[in-house]
Image (cartoon, rainbow, N blue to C red; front, side, top):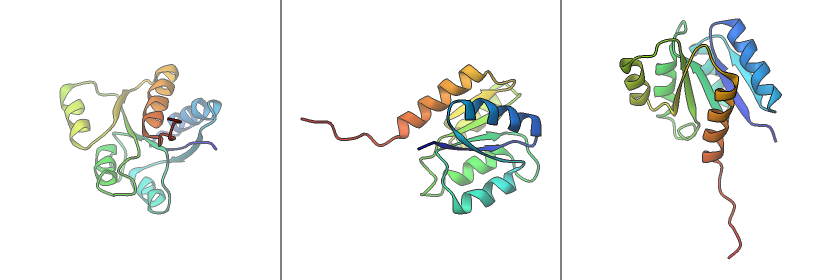
Length: 131
């Protein structure tokens, strides 16, 4: 079964690039252009992870993350925020809203794959081992 990744970014080129990178690794991506569309998707779906751009129209990635982490069904879904800004304020804000990771643009495909895989694997239910 393929893992589903919600990608929310207002730049079509970024959404396409992420789809290419993630689908090559067997992930199914659902790409939306803004925060409002992300929340609409999340009303009826629970992805395995979310990649949210910090700077988007209608609602930024910080606000989406903050809302998601308050919903019991979605609380455990890893949220990776993407930003071009690399400063203490942005890192602190990401922690405050409960983001699981902060990725800096331009994104490295290798780094993205490793961090996403690590977060998803950490959330997978452990199967009971033999005693």
